[in-house]
Image 1: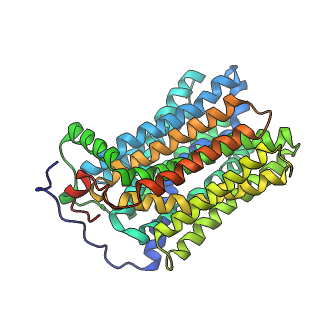
Image 2: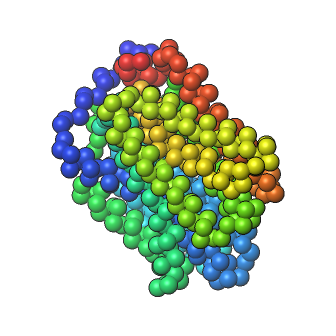
Image 3: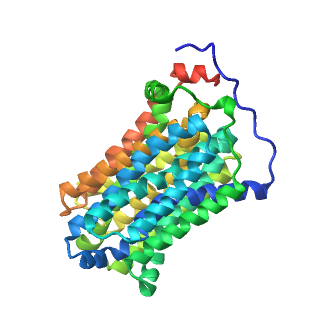
Amino acid sequence: MSATAAPAPAPAPAAESRGARLRLIVMLGALSAFGPFSIDLYLPSLPTIVDDFGTSAAQIQLTLSACLLGIAAGQLLAGPVSDAVGRRRPLLCGLALYAGTSLACAFAPSAPALIGLRFAQGMAGAAGMVIGRAIVRDRYRGDEAARVFSGLLSIHSCAPLIAPLIGSQLLRLTSWRGTFVALAAAGLAGLVVVGRSLPETLPPARRQSGGLARTGSVLRELVRDRVFLGYAFACGGTYGALFGYIAGSPFALQELYGLSPVAFAAIFALNGGGQLSASLLNARLLGRFRARQMLAAGLALGSGSAALLLALALAGEPLGVAGVIVPLFGIVACLGFVIPNATALALERHGTVAGSASALIGVLQLVAGALASSAVGLAGTSSVLPMALAIAVLSATAAIAAATLTRTQQGCSGLAREQGVDA
């Protein structure tokens, strides 16, 4: 690929106040939380949806899968589009469509209609997730970008903790349809805030042209860049390990060890708090350590905790429930170190196609999560071993990919050179 038409690297962002940066982090973090809120807010409503439509739980559970698939597809659409036309317009369109599809979900006449609408809702909600990451790359570089991503992850981490609680309280005031009205209202609020407060961050000179052919070329070049893939697999493997924990821990802790739902919820919240604390600590330590160092520490924590869990499972779980809880805390907490640093490092070399690069990272995370949860479910819940094995494999994949594929910067692809990005 020719480098003769390379655009100049983007200028460093102008100095901004601490308050302005905090407002941006809160705004983009809220946008990134649309995905988990779309998934978790209506979880307490699932039994009532089954009763309302007079169908099976299995069919209603497809609304979850449809939303996840929609988020994956939406990222692949919104990311490249934002590289071509700028960030604001696709983001505003996505928020408007999210509000509309959420409201349509509230009036769904049947389970199949709700499944289709949930797919559309996931596609629309993906715009905030993928474009938010691209906006960070537009404005920040290196360790500074990793620090901002830590802030986004801190907000994102709160969503799975509070969304089911909010959903259960909404059920006391309204039906399951009211939860989707609440999501529509959130989409409208986001549309107003973004429309009034978020300027365009990708100037016309740095936008991509060439339509679908150019998009395909960009995606192929990203896949050929082994350094990008190393960081992307670090994100995907760690995220997949999280989904292995989410799929296996309810059965392991409640059915095998007899913990009550309240005790399980408390442990789940404790682990979520560990991830949140790690995100905040990562942001603070990035002033003293580089993003690659923090990433290595996070991968070591995750793979070490996964190896401990697997060893205890193979040994017959001699420590009982404590032998499961302790390593699970490390497995979840490591995301606070891995995701922001690996994301920042992966996007660093791909500024003008940050939307496409962000989309690939997001899709890889979702695919890894889907594979992990499916593998744990198919293997059964008679022991901790299937969950431990899935988590260990994915954690090791993340660590090995980061260690081998990103060892040097000689994996710089033609795409990175074309953008004038120093390797």
